[in-house]
Length: 415
Image (cartoon, rainbow, N blue to C red; front, top):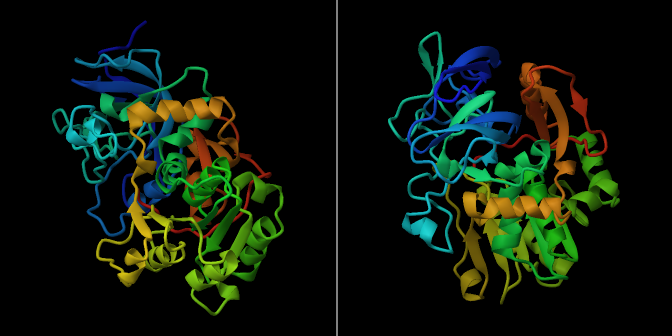
């Protein structure tokens, strides 16, 4: 029996207050309104951004709220005016959108949609400002327009990418945020040439996705840079074992070399210039640290080097570099979501995975059922692994992919 047009009752993991464990409760999900889609979420994963807003650091707290923005699902029903997708379509909800009508969407150079650009403070839907979630008649707020920690969610049609129904949702869902952000920063913005030298600052999920992009572009040297000089000896040993010794994991993620700042007493840009005979062809900064941004820019080769900023700094941060670096023909660029247009471009990235041109499985280090979603937060807060897949069946066991499991520092990353 069709449930289109009706209120759905389903399980969701709700953040009732900042920093407190999520509660998996039955909630009500209203039908989609004009230009909206109701999606049954099959798999979702936890991103640093979810943790950052769950902790409510440096922002206006908005609770209760359903977090989550990396997911894969199937369209259950559509609202008035929706023609691009229909019930049964496989989709990736995405934290930013593409209205296909504004100047940014009509420009080949931009993906910064005027209508659906990321908004972290909006708790309702664009159509009427109201939430589609409730519990016992009380509203529960949306997050980034996606709220994928619910078995059913309502999303603006401009924020869903229709994908190949044969694509495994438990793998390609990571393309709705971190993987596309890092991978796209390399392949779409930095654009290293075959045989080129690339430096990646910050080796979390986004940084390793950037390294994967450099691998796909066939860069000959991919230098991973650790920005935490206070890392414990145990963690330092693990990373050296991964990157310096060129283990199977290092090859999987693309890095050919590893630089730990604790081992050197000179600026990293000077060190990289010495290692590469003048600097790398491209650098990708994935931490949000302004110090790293300066280093990433100043470590690229004069004449043609391109530095790409991915990490988001704190609100009041700024940095200084000498204008001579620009006059010497170094280029500094920023990127948002890897310069991908969500609806137009992400289906093609999914096809790269289907053709085995892009590796995703190695980024998924854990899997838990919805009922154990708080374990995913624990893993991330401990800096353990990369991505934890959350199965919306709300049952089952925890799974750990030991072949790619390692520890990284927890540095909040906000797209």
